[in-house]
Length: 267
Ligand SMILES: [Zn+2]
Image (cartoon, rainbow, N blue to C red):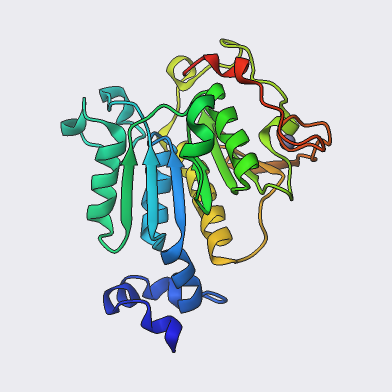
């Protein structure tokens, strides 16, 4: 049993409750162990997503975030404690995740993701889990995912509503198929102005992590092209299909058409 031999005794114990799942075994666990996932943003989405990716045994996790931890992050960014205020998010999150699961490798990158660096920075991963909180960065990540052909699991939340959208390049629609250009600054409020309830982020990021783990392990139906919306006020899920746009400037028939002007805002 070559596949089993590649998992240590500690790993077999740690993952024993998922190793007995239907259609999930040592082969799938080994796929997770070999996977490289980049989590963009160690905030309200990134923190719970990181916990679950690490808990499942995703073997190589890179965290990209340029922010420092603030006291007002603590209602939702569950990797951090009051003693962490003022420290860099990426490094602090990486340290905590390594304590949580010492079987995996975790790297921290303290950088702003922009048009200039996104294609190189996000290259070489099996999946991107995006939880960034501004549109210029989200679009840069979308474009890098399309150009590098990396599956993108995007999640976001505001007030009582969470959204999850999965992009499988070459198969399903991307963010620009749905919204071709970045919404002008100030047209969509952020959680800074509109507020956010922490567990709503937990629901959205859990769906995101489930989809990412399913993709890496080769399990089940994928959410590519489906926008999932969770409404915490009614405790209900809704969804709509997003069709691929053949004129999309990122994934359309003409191939990727760079539009760097849009990325001037650093978010
Ligand atoms: Zn597209």
